[in-house]
Length: 102
Image (cartoon, rainbow, N blue to C red; front, side, top):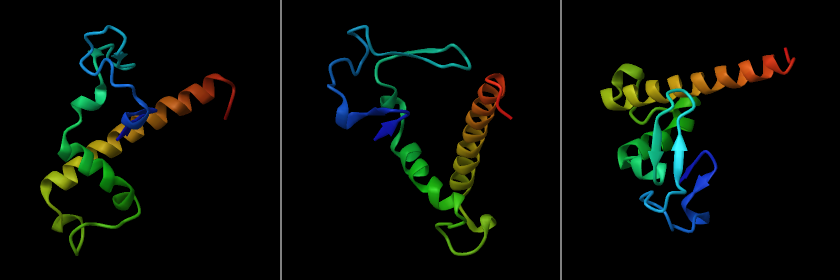
């Protein structure tokens, strides 16, 4: 699994629980601090939904039919992922504008 440049495969797994003091992550938006590996906060269901995002983004749905034929948890998950992607893209666009980009 990988989260914004953090990959279990390249990690030395020496501070997964944060007790060593160097696995500290801060949310840029809320300022909330997480001690330990942020990947431990990702549930199997969240991981599964995130793995489905590329298919959803291209218009492929897991159940035949339209969006109303999908499970509520699937649709809600895709809406949350899209919301987070939108926030990220807006922040990146704002950074670009501040640097003088158009």
